[in-house]
Every structure is written in structure tokens, then in C-alpha cells.
Length: 151
Ligand SMILES: [Zn+2]
Image (cartoon, rainbow, N blue to C red; front, side):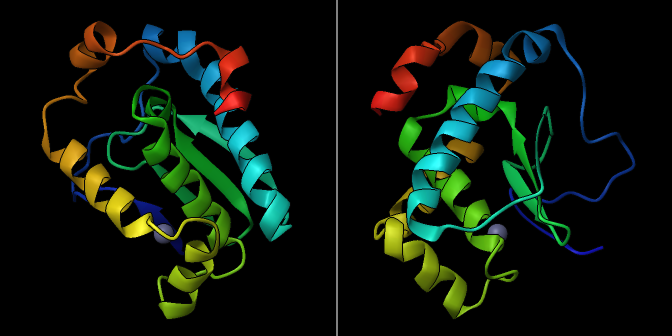
């Protein structure tokens, strides 16, 4: 089954997800963020998905399967909200355009004209050391769930 995802790709045989105490403690909060923002952007797109899974993935922010299943990295909770929104809207658009062709990007631009700036900023964040587990625990704070809808 083919899959489109956002993130660095590595070829290795190590497992790509792991269940850590930090993940377990924040998984449901990440799900609330993701579902709230999917709902927000879907006011425009009005597509449907099958299932949303929150994972602690090593190399991807999000992915969309051919069956309409959406997967998101719980660390979306710990990056700037405009970048998390980019990932969430990006995967939502894959439900309609299952590729990275010009129509896909045009679709995304309809809700996010500055998607390319956000994409660049996300890449820069990946290159920095700010996303190690230690950095996430010590330098980022979790935005309270009740504030998510206001964003
Ligand atoms: Zn994609």
C-alpha cells in the first residue's frame, strides 16, 4: 500500500515508532489538537477520513494511507502551532489528492496560501536539535487543551 508522508526518510531496520512515558502522557492531548484542527480545516474541504492514529514516529510528522487512515506524530503538540497546522492540513488534502502534484499544492494553498513558508520552517526545525526527546521535555511546554480551539 502506498503512503505519502511528511518527514525525513531513512532506510534502516530499526523500529520506527516507540511507546515512551512522554508519548503515553501526551498522546490524547495530541489527538485533541489534531482532531480540532482537522475539524477546522475540514469546514472548507469537507472530506472524510477513516481513522486518526497518534504515534511516536521517528521520521514522519504525518501520513495518509490509501484507505483514508491518517497518522500523526504526537510531537506536533510541541512545535509551533502554525507548523502543526501545516502538517494537519497537508494530510487532510491527501484525502482528496493522493499525490504531491500541482493540484495537491493548489488545494492546500486554498486554506494555507503561505504553506511553502511553513514547509520551509518545518524543515529548518527538523535540521535543528530542538526536536530531541530531551529538548522537547525541557524546552517546550504543552499548550493547554482548552486553548487549542482559540488558535
Ligand atoms: Zn504529503
